[in-house]
Image (cartoon, rainbow, N blue to C red):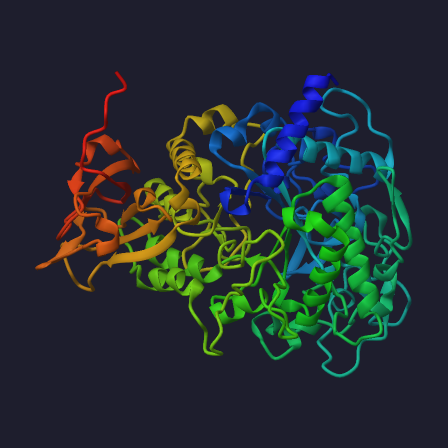
Length: 638
């Protein structure tokens, strides 16, 4: 590697460290479903070949997506051209490869959430050689080198990498010996799932040993050395006593009485995370040690933490504190945000506070499901239908509001980077879980693009879901019904859209344009949210309208964003009323200059005075962004 190349890489890494997280545009990739860059890893050595679907159609089997598929896109500049700055990958650690009981049937661990070895990368994802053809060593060392190389490549392109992590459970690594014969009877449901025991536990748990499905004792079972680093793990994850072994209750996922914290997830094995438990400190220290390795030696930039509300709150206090202590000053460069699957801001924000009452943050941020649910109610309808944006306005405005306890729902205390949970909240409108793709049956591509515009203009760190850049449609998905049908292959091996075709799509071009606008407009990254107009119930003139301002510290940086969800033109006014800018925004002689329009050209929209009653006419199913600027014409450079 030349001195110039080393210098450029160092400069890029320094710029990444200095870039605030509020500048990021995230892209969430379900790695197995992005692109099959290396067909040789589709059936790793010893793996049951029936777990892979070469047609890439069966969402319950592996489809071949891997790190090489993402690597080639990173190297080619695909994500840079889209405007993405951070890649969030589904869990990359070695998984259990099959379960006999998950949501009622046989499935594979293609998604990564069924960990078996926390210090190995799953062989479905890695390659025998580097991009330049250099061979990797066999085994876990080679697989970890590939992952580190992926992170380095992403950094060289200005992309941060966020690793999805699961601390609530392992995969189906042990079975319940229901009939007492000492053998895992793979076709017997009772050996995968036992009923929940509120008192006591199932003492008949035994480690599985099914090589073809990688069902075996959890790892690491002691210290490891990888990438030249000694990792002092103690084997806490490989002790049956560290698991609750309480079984599963079908309705526990929606409960809030403690059962949702203690039970298995179907055939997944729940850790015993209760503070004061015999293995609490060992588990906390083990996970802090493991993720310190990924965040430092491998170079990962952040952690997205799965199933947060299914773990004791005190566990998160201890984990985040001990991990930050290990990281030292480097903690200011890292982000830890969690998945709290709930629409209640008091529940969502709870985990940004510590359970012990201290003001310093627990998690840095969470995914904002409240805003997600409200945005979908407004926009996710078939044909020209639409909902009401009032709940969306309330959800966003409420991010900085106090809850019933009298303190803010989201912790306003700054984290190690000086930013707080209200600033770093993650804004999204679709993901891989039950709510799934925004574009389901009947939702148009134009409406889909409108939804992405909403994500990129609302406050918070915007997060796109893989396939959003092609308006990927889940034709089996039903509005109002949870499901996993949207976990489709984006770039299939045969007869599918190519990356070049994706870049030519309207969805890709609009996302790229909005990301570029966000990058250069401070108000869209960190500006204060000021709601301005929501359509009047039953009104005809303003049906579907939602308007808000993003206000920067300098009034000149303020922008006005207006959405029209209706399939006909609508105006920011009804009867004798019209949108009016607050006095501190209109600036006297200011005017509104259009700088962006979905589905069209901003130049087609008129520039208007920013005073008085504003009747902005917005085309059907579109959004417009206006900048408040001086009424004086721009001076010539000549």
